[in-house]
Image (cartoon, rainbow, N blue to C red; front, side):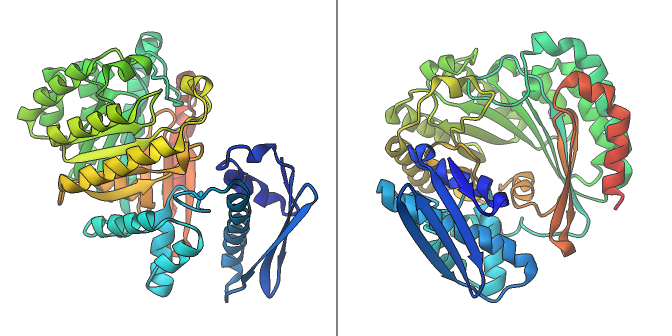
Amino acid sequence: MLTSSCKWLEPELMDVVRLFEGAEDLEIFHEVTVGAHFENFFRIGEEAFSFCDENAARTPLEEKSLVKRYAKLALYNLLSARFQKTLPWGSLTGIRPTRLAYKELERSGNFAPMFEKLGVSEENIALVERVLEGQKGVYGRGADGCDLFVSLPFCPTKCAYCSFITAPIAATRKFMPAYLEALERELAAAAPRIKNLRSVYIGGGTPFALEAEELERVLKAVAPLRTNGCEYTVEAGRPDTFTEEKLEICKKSGVTRICINAQSFSDKTLEKIGRKHTAADLYRAFEMAKPFKFDVNCDLIAGLTDESLEEFEKSIDAAISLSPENITVHTLCLKKGARLKEETARLQDGLLSEMISYSREKLTAAGYEPYYLYRQKYMAGAHENVGWTKPNKACIYNVDVMEEISDNLAVGANAISKKLFAKEERIERYGSPKDLPTYLQKIEKIIQEKDKLFAQ
């Protein structure tokens, strides 16, 4: 249990506590003093600890951020010494390390010294440098830039690691007619608010879980908004939903990129996570998509079930052999709502580190470069998710979303829209209801409130 004299800091400090196994059992008291220095006082039982950082020149706007940063660093240093353990991202718990790197580059011209102070490993500092390099030509705060996201929260089955509000399509199909109509209404209302469309992303769920005519209906509703030939992605999903008809519909509708969400090429792992397909089906999906010449993204997850290092290495090798334009390597994130969270003890950090190291080595050797990364709470081993790309094949949508450098107009249930106010360095969000009945009941209000947000 942790208690702080600064109540708004408690959730931030708990993010650090959760990084160390056993730390949540400690009684930790924290007090912070802001003056000529940032002074953090901690007490664990009878032991007292004090940490002091220089108070660099700052504006009132920066103070809260710096207080948080140095309080978390002080606690990380304390727990790291207590548990004799360092972590790959040190005291950084935010989901976007690259955003902090960009800000520090603007301020000082070099982010590495700050990251070193925060305890980030040399390997991860180098990774961030590579990501920033990989974003050149894509990264940019264009005037009135906007990305469009369309949510199709339907899946054949729910995977054991998944915490999204999805259910087997057999149980939700009754909502499909009304849902498609609601999407059409949202997209028509969104059209006047989109000026400089950078990308379109249709995600889920598993969009290919829809019947071909249903998918075509969604793509037709998007067509009037995409008049500039921008990047267009459909997260096709699992191979057991692939058909040539659906791929043909995507091609005719101008889709430029699809995602084949493998997660693993181990039949044993696929069965354990609740997938109804095999690795052979994944190879068939790639072969089926090849004639359509889409850019392809393939997702893998490190740390699934009790998968061995050898099994994960085979998945990396298999993905590379199929030569998709992008390969994204996720680290298992166990959130509430995921069945696997209830069944899985804390994963072996050493094993995960070996998996991540292998993926970086092999993807680099195969000519891929990292171009986006993000982190999540409850991520196994305090690691990260990294998107790797072939030269000049980076996904604009992924960069824009992860770096939050463009508006994101999102339609559908559980879709979170973001309006960027660049000059004020702030973002306003609007989240649509997660469950289908509530979303359908409130569709008129959702359209009105979203229109109000993007009219600013």
